[in-house]
Length: 408
Image (cartoon, rainbow, N blue to C red; front, side, top):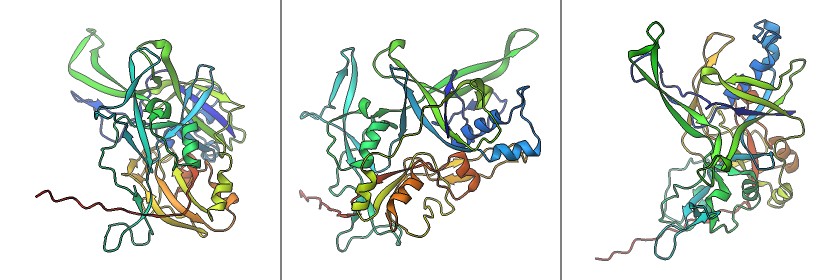
């Protein structure tokens, strides 16, 4: 497989499904992060182009590009040494609180002595729970456990929790989610990824070179850089999208500039021959084997399942608990059939499934590590449902319900 870095040179526009027409005050809104179908479509378009730069619409060429398998996209950030480092969506089984000082103020420190506060946070693991006698819940009857904190915490979740985690922090979370992590720097854990870029536009009369009456509209894109330390461009790190491409056959993709997304914004496509997707953390498989096959499966990209939030793992894998937030919705345009694709509801990236694997644990972990899992072959080939595997000791803690005191 070959890893490609897709680096936006302009704000990337990946529109949501809301209509955008030539009407006064129209707004084109962008998704917070591109779906795998966007990058898969870009890869296949690039692979299917002829020497003239136009896509070859022959049946043979269309069949060939549809066989290309894409894994991703994953967010990457360029460090000072010029290396691209991976980030992943924050997992749903992590709950982040702000660390507070004794006086109740938020705990923060100045980053690098330049006046930028960095909030200190506390990260807790949402784990399988059993209910005390006489308590009821609305969990599905065929799931054994709830997900939550054994000891409830009345604090509100932090607004400073990063949307994306650095891979090294995520790998630690896969191997040891129960580790004490307070206080933890929010900046060290990760950041919010691409930031919105909102622009106001006006239509121009080509004859008079003046604005058209009422032709005012707005667009929203994603700026792929991260400014972590100062209001200086020297402190800005580049962000990009990373995808893994397989099964090109005789088709080739060239390095260089090419459009992607709405308004054909330019991207710099770079092949990274020596780069690979992250490997399985050390001792992870051994730990899962020692825990009788109990583990966590975490979605790194949204996934489509016929049963909604629930995957069909097949024989030998038992689903015991899950942490899944609200669904996301995807559609698109089918260039082969010249019509819209059916709208699908997806389990969001970051969803966590607590499972027990029977049989060959090592083989199962290898088959699931950064592989796509979706109940649709086309979506799976496009990169929907990319998964990572983490440890779980197989234990369920008793939920402690604290009774409120009656002060009269």
